[in-house]
Image (tube, rainbow, N blue to C red; front, side):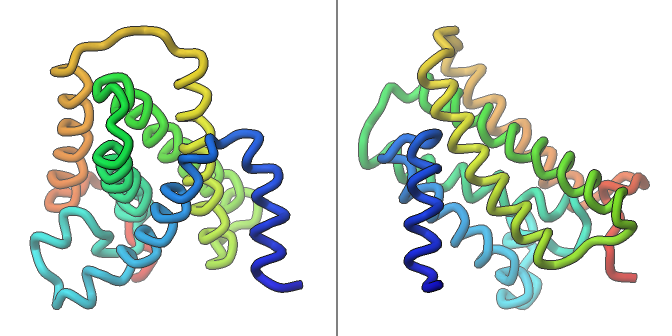
Length: 182
């Protein structure tokens, strides 16, 4: 089966859950996440790049592959379509947090059952989490009418970004932050 047919087959089901205008951005987030996985090494271990790209094989660092690509493609999508900013970025923030949660739950569930991780499963978990984020965003756009302030919305993005920055430099001594490479 050709990759084009696989994408087409998946697209039929994904269109049911992800808004059509969001699909290119979901795919861009996946591509950006794949590229970000290698950017730290390619940058010569740049301290700036370390803030937004994984620096080791810990689950925490790999959550950056979800959060920052979703943020970046959301900014690009906002610039193109100009939806109502506060609502758009609030829903995307909730979606990004959902993706992080999905990744943590799926990763620790399957590794807990099997006893180790597998690269193919890790990649599938990443892709599933990105699609889950955009499906959650579509859900929030349809159903969530709660209003939030601009300051609160952008403070949430900044607060979580700062957590990534701080915990990259000073990781706590808990398994979420342990690198799989010894």
